Image (tube, rainbow, N blue to C red):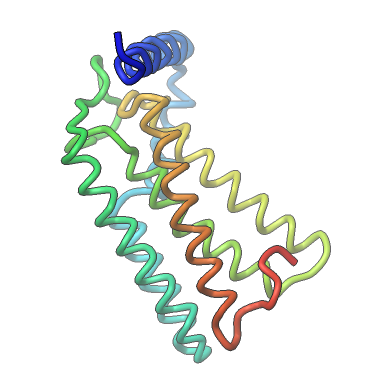
Length: 192
């Protein structure tokens, strides 16, 4: 058995263990909560928030930040769509507690939430100092993690789908932060 085959078998075992554990813990109140949380990562929400944020940045003449946001999110979206087609992984078996179409790997909610909320949190936090800066970054991080976990809880993604979405989204986010640091109005230090 090759290394790749061994990795895939290990991931499938891990994914199924996590799926069975979470399904056994389902509670109606949490299903309702996580259905609401996952809506913050839906395509319509991501597009609307990106458009609002871009318009707000443009109104402040922060053209570089608006362009990086739009280009970064678009590039991440295209990459996600291509990866889904390439891997063609089916969604988890069992009842999906919210609608989910298309393939499962990587999680678009996890990936695009990392890009959008991560970059917006970063932009906002750069204008703050002290505990407020870290509170904004922690809040953005918590929101991203909750959206990712909601996809597993609602049985529309395997845990490895979400983890891959976070990793790939983080790569885009870091590239966007790096690009922003190179603009005239960007911070001179990435992690001040």
